[in-house]
Each structure stands twice: as C-alpha cells, then as structure tokens.
Image (cartoon, rainbow, N blue to C red; front, side):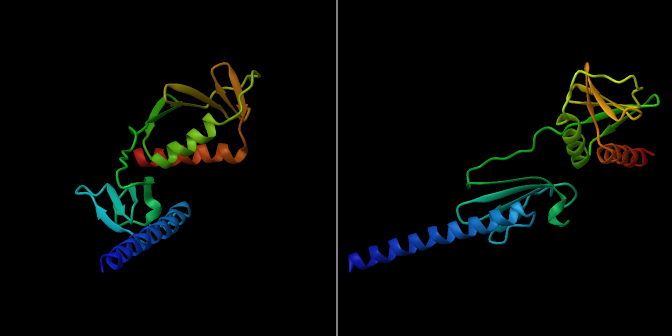
Length: 182
C-alpha cells in the first residue's frame, strides 16, 4: 500500500513538472510575440503600474505605461523568470533637445528608445561636414548634433550619416513632443 501511494505521488509530481515546462514554453512564446501570458494568474499592484503574472514555476513582471487595463502592447518593461526573480525598472531617462534657442525634454520611453537606437548605434567616422547643427540632443551626458543639410549626426569630433527615414523619425519625435508641450 505504501509503494502505491509513493508511486502516485511521484507520478503527480512528474505531471506537475511537465505541465510547468509546457506552460512556461507557451507563455515565453506569447511574450516574444508581444502577447499577454495565457497560463498565469494575473495580479495588479495597488498603484496599477506593475502587473505580475504567476505561472507554474515561473512569473512574468510587466510595467505598464498608462493602465493595466490598456492593451498589452502599452508596456514599458517585461521580464520573465523564476518565482524568486526581482525586477524593477531602471531610473527613467530624460532626453534634452535644443533647437532655435529652445530646450525641450522627452520622457516618453518609446521615443527615447528610438532616439537611442538611431544615435548610439550609428557608425561614426572622423569626417565632419561643414553643416550647421539644427538640433542638439543630449542622452546620458552624451551630446549628438543633427546636421540636416549634410544628413549627418555629429558626436564629439566624429560624424555618421543618417538615412532619410531615420532623420524623418527624429523629426516626427521632436514634432510630437513640441505639440505635447504647447
């Protein structure tokens, strides 16, 4: 009788582990495609800026930009790990843009990510054009100058070409944040 109960306990334990692996796999696939986890219990923090999804042996922590009831795509940060994982958002970055004697600050996380991606990941070389800096963007105490006439970005004493698409993206971000300040 004792062997039978041990057999059943081991069987149930193995079944729980297999179900945990399958749901973990399915929910990690959901996260990579930008969807909400399916096989979890959802808990919202008191102030509504953090949602924790508890799965079988794992958890997903998501910080939302507006409200936990907004679409899943409106998140700031998502992290998946074990039940013991701790995840806090890093300090928010502030980007300053100077143009025409005016200074504006951008705090929107997605806009900052796009600007960082364009400015930081550009290939800088030593050739500098004689154009005039139209916009000066400061990220993490690093200054980048946008020279529209040359279609280049200057960083310190180096310069990188910027595509028309990237230049238009930067200008749209600036324009959108100008209208937000008015």
